[in-house]
Image 1: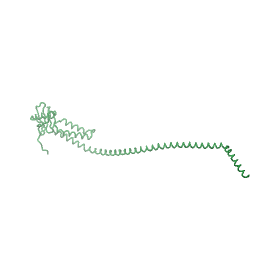
Image 2: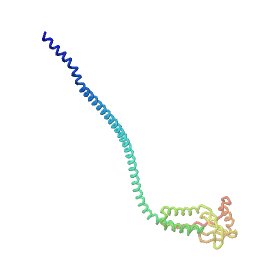
Image 3: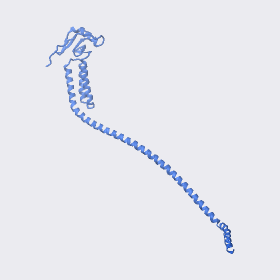
Image 4: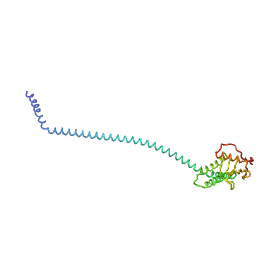
Length: 257
């Protein structure tokens, strides 16, 4: 009996003492709770700061990614532009080489063409001297102008050639046209009638004298037999009458040896 009662008292005593112990340590428990809450608060604050930093880094990464993509687009555009410039530079280099070749050819051509043009001009001058004496001042002045032009450095080679060819064309045109103009035979003022290069006739202003250029004799011949013909021809040349047949002196053909 004695043995069973002792343990019960011990348990009761422990039960009685435990609340006292708890009451005695209440300050320590409060501090412990406060510390735990503080640590939790710090952890949450650190988590919030970390989240904020993560968000900031994410935004920075997104911005950097956008900049990178933009840089790629610009790099591709610059590459395409560089390739295009490269093609243009190559084309310009080829053009420069071609122009250099052309310049060299022009220098060679100039050495060859200038003597040819001089000969053309001399031939034209000789032809005019041997031709019928129509429009003598106009034709001689044209040749004199061309000769003066040949000595000028400010006139291009192509322009000189063009002007000489143009003079040849004018002379050729004389052979296909009929023309009336006023001039002089000696001291007499007359009207000339040129029918191509077939005949050159004249008539005084009062109509009393008519003549023609004798190609073989190289002189003027008075012949009133052509009076009516030249009168009709002058009207046709001045467009005062419709084209018609007229009688003109034609030199006999000569054999050229």
